[in-house]
Length: 338
Length: 295
Image 1: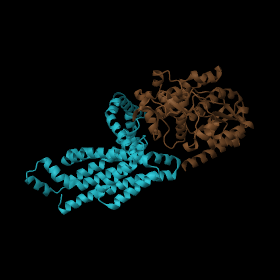
Image 2: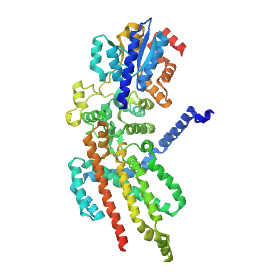
Image 3: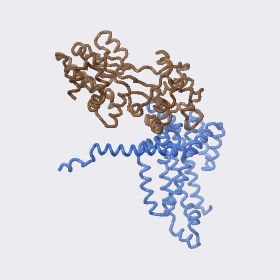
Image 4: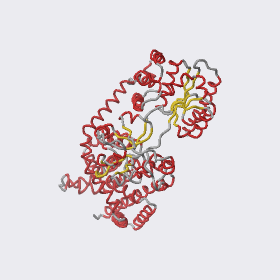
């Protein structure tokens, strides 16, 4: 219930602020409103954008609290806020396509964070010890490297906790890759804490571990987990939407597939393009390497840092990353202001 | 006067250092001794796996027959036996046989473990006030600490699965048997003990010949409560990967599957009621014999 009210409030606030911004005229860069979504990586990105646009391009930036649906609705209906740095587009695919077609919104950056999404992971020590394990197909042939504690002759594949959407996808992929026949057991970790705990225990001890997780998260960053290539291409939308994510009884014949790509975009309004055109290049170039983003998330969790603290930390520590996003004199201006 | 309105707390950085030190100490401990501790529990794990397989692979009529015989031996009551039979038939009919067997296996082992550790602990407590003063606060902690507080360290040490699940169940379920054993022995009439003394009974004769038999009804109430609390922990144990009736409940909770949750929840309740009735009747019978003056 709280969540519903929260979302409604956020939406109202977003719309209201958006309106006031949209009506004010703009100078060289002018006023820009950026959606600060309610999860860590998006908070960081919004705050970095704010600092760079203000110090580097002379914009006047206001951060607006947001969440995927309310923020997108407001951008779609009112053209404000101007920028959504990290919009998970799968949830709004159809209206986004329409808005882009009508030139009301623009996808300024198709993947602002690399290595993002769900998939199967290995600890770094395992990858180092067994460089031959290049894809999921290689790993699947070596259940002996990942012994299951309750039956040492089998390999343990740690799936998704009971009741999560990804549980079905993992179970169906488990069948598609014929892992049972190859000597694997699909382990249900029971809860997020169970999943985190099993991964943490294995990595801390230098043991092998093979299982499901997603990025960007501080767990992936903390343990520097390696995302495994599936070794097969994406098996098509039809296979994924009508089989892999369905219960077993509705998915008689799952086909091998890599995990569906999570579409994450930086979306800007037409207004932003008009008023802050100089900054469009920045938004387009701004690609966070996954490892750095995960590292920042670890920093945020461990230090209990806000998005703003983390943004300064990022700008101070990772100059080599962000200086490539902007022209040298803009970079100089930003550096001077830190 | 600032200290009056603001609590003079530790500075944020000191607090962070403190937390870090504790975390690192535990991580170090887990790295250096984790493998040994896991090795120590390996036989238990193998036994648990074997026991679960035994329950699942034995043909169902044999299992039901065995349970009915045990129910009869325990309760000597036809209604209880019939109720047990119907309950297990319904559980099987609704497709929960395998999960129920997994749960039954781990609960039986947990109960056995709790009793074999708990009763000696209770006896030691009854014997010495000092021991009691030490153990009572420990039991208080075990009963009230939120389970995830100790689940996470246990998982870091032993991984997910049956053994950490069993430990979690026992931490929660062992206090009643300890407390009630202690209480039962302490409540034995002083006059009776004096009589035993005057017959020249030594400590062990007094313990097993007088105190334990007189305390048995109370101890049995403890066994009963331990089983109940173990069953109550089934869902929590599933949150660290224990197979059984808890997993479908978790699945139901996160997806609002009303029927699935209700069915598996009720299966846990049915197990609890059967255990409860059988042990209650068993305890009552002991009391009856005592009152009749038989043994």
